[in-house]
Length: 228
Image 1 (cartoon, rainbow, N blue to C red):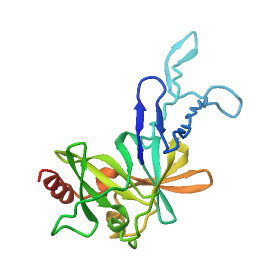
Image 2: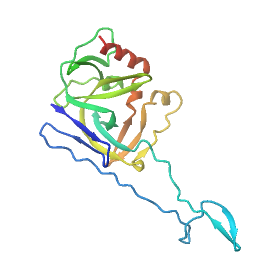
Image 3: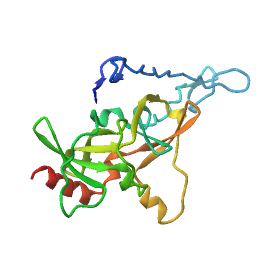
Image 4: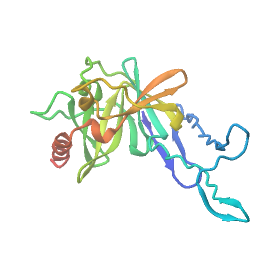
């Protein structure tokens, strides 16, 4: 099974995942709302003090309040690890494929399953279950490898992520995303790869910053594997 993700950035963005049955999953259109700023009497609020006085009346410059956009909003690919649903940015995804033969490499961490040959290019493969200290699980027909572009410092490389199954593509607005709860000293640094928590379709999705899931040293190690 191989699933292709196509992304168009010009005009209306669209991401489609093709299933093995050839039926694309529908993308979700983002709706952007505009809110006018007004006072209790229905008049536009004065956002700037008077700049001058003409005939005894203050000249007021009215400017619309511009909110800083949440950079986390956008399209995400969601996938399952056990009963939990995670999501990564669609723009980081290069390809999705079913599980295939993985060549094990000696003296690597247990979560590094080995390497695969992707059209002549050697790609290291990481099992996200083991990376997140979750119990190992036997691979099934639903198990997928998500090939992502990882950037760590000056190193940019393709890495395969083994997940239990791929779900869908979601378009998340800023209002759907909340900051990660404060887990206390020591824990926050260990969860720095979390972008936030999203609420969609009655469930919570854990948003991952895929560039931070692997430490810089780990990325350099994986990059060395891909050069072998």
